[in-house]
Image (tube, rainbow, N blue to C red):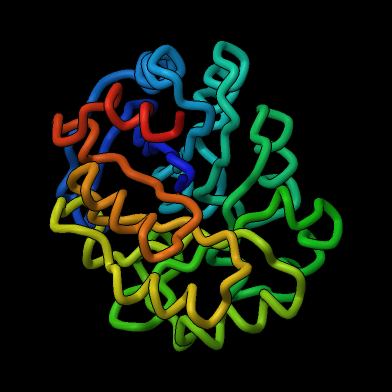
Length: 239
């Protein structure tokens, strides 16, 4: 069964969701720690946390929120947003993250990314591959690079990357369904990759459809907060 990973995005210490990565289209959903506790109570094991302030500021901002979640729950947390320097990545791990998601640095400083991959190991580093119009987007989705998705993935799969979080930005926060064709193309090209699909999930049927095309894991957020998914029913799918 596909691995289920609920998401918490943070701005100013609060749990939020954006639409298509637009900071001006923000909905707020309360305290991250309360949401994390609810996920744990229901039966989830994993959590994806994004420091949106950090992504915008280009350094980690909400490490205290991360530390609170990791110290007060047993959830396995992967954390991203604003990890630009060695101090940032060390701060994330010190605050309790088991894994970190790195996107912008993989584009702008590939040597640093591959050094981190070597230093911390491929089980602790998730390559962030966020796509808009076929190009990798960076800096909290504010800038588009010249990198095309599949060649970008090949470069890092060849370097030892095992885990990739791929978001179709045009789908994120829209509740219009995931980018099934995009993920099918990635899985066809890299069948051994632990691909984490993200963006657009609106229902349990969307998650079942991702599972059917062989996607190993899925991140979902807005569908939870808007009541589109019955979490108790979803957890049953994991057994």
